[in-house]
Length: 291
Image 1: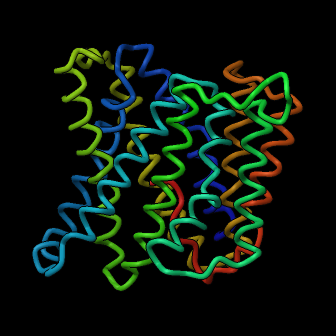
Image 2: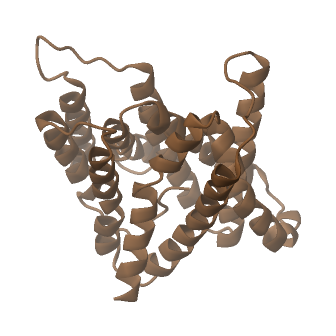
């Protein structure tokens, strides 16, 4: 009971995570700045807890790869969900099964089974339906926001594959890699793009927006705790279903707040992507959810 509630809380927090990024963007804060600031709190906490573990780590290349993919995942997804249609972005992001099949073969040398190929085909078909590519009069068109959403899903799948490859490492260390990567990678990207004149410098926030930043920093930390608690106590199949409820929370909240339109192609394409995500999910433990 408590484990199910914990996973639903995690999914609920991530399903509504588009809201602070859009609100802060209206206040003059690009999502790269917002992401760096939101993750600064959890990064500081994890650095304090894990500094001795990190310095004792002999092989640090895996740590930096996880940090980089985690940071770039957040950069792509948070920017896309801030600037684009929330439901469309979330659904395209969840093309992860397609990328997971390919990356597991390339990185982990896992065999391509008919089941995995079926998952990949379902995911591609779902994306084609969402973007209009199933109609001859409306060819498949991915705009820059779509590309960011797809890239975010690819990077998230790569992050999961890397976590699986380095499952022998301390779990706290991998959490440190993900949260610090989300903070410092986005900070570096924001500084680089600002110096290039592509994004504005961060606006001075009022008390209300500062409170919003702090609130969501704490909510993301709480969501991660809920994920670790629930996923360690429930079967993987149930965990997968509960984690995917994030799509439901995100879609309904975006539709309710007039940030998205949910039509036939979104329902059909999203259903195909959900089927791909759930098909054959029999791991003992999920690798990760959002970072």
